[in-house]
Figure: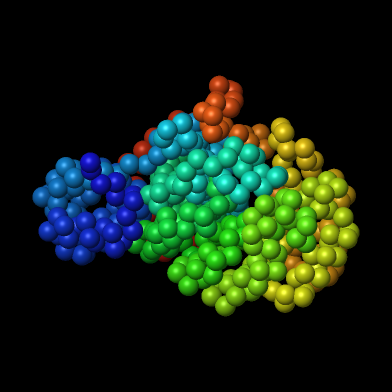
Length: 383
């Protein structure tokens, strides 16, 4: 079977090129064609020798995940549903802002953590994505957006692994994918602009700090073990104190001087003034530099949970800010296409193979490849 070159980082391409009798610099050229320029047609890679292009055509391929559907929100958010095979599907979401373009990608089909407020977790865990399948979401989105927006420069400046799955439970495939995203011959994403979100897999946080430190976001959602055990079952294995100390250790290697704590506000569950006081005490006791990102809950059928009121969200924000903790409230995006946080299971197959709402009519935008003349401009992202 032909090798899918999206599965390979730069050193992997070097090994493949060597097996073809090609020198190392050919791997760098090929890497740039694939990732910087988004080209999938070997015949269009004009600075490669004809003989090399013929070898590639016979022995290799560049194959992204097939697109099942594509939807655009009224706020400009775009969501793609990708076919991951065997009845599995994963989603990626592009979120445009005035000063950046953020792509949220998935690391697993489903999720085994089972957080109570996350609809993805309710479908169960199906499988890990390969490193190529993780990278393929960025590869596809970048090349589509350039064509869709009529631009040659890089569109995606930030990548967050906050989609389906727990990235640190797919560590072996995560790290090679991160290295492709960071590589200046590929996407050149800054470590500060590449964020891994975790529900708290403590040993892997320590490994990531040594292997590939990028920005870290931690799904906290509760200030004490009793409540977090209920909301985030992984806490029973890695309690809050262990998690917070791991985050503090990570700061020694992190590209940012703070850890982001995600806190999904649930009505009459974790949104009282007492919870604020406990959270402030926890942060001060551990002595960790952090930012708290408050997330309004996105209700879904069967959760039994409700979003905190605007007044309670504002109270929580003011109390944390008043305690000297940098706090933000996440703006909900893409609600009309189920693209917001916690809604990424809206159109995927669950473990029984039943398709949920796949027939629901939405505005679908045509998908066209980037022409061979379109190129990425290296170094256009602020670093």
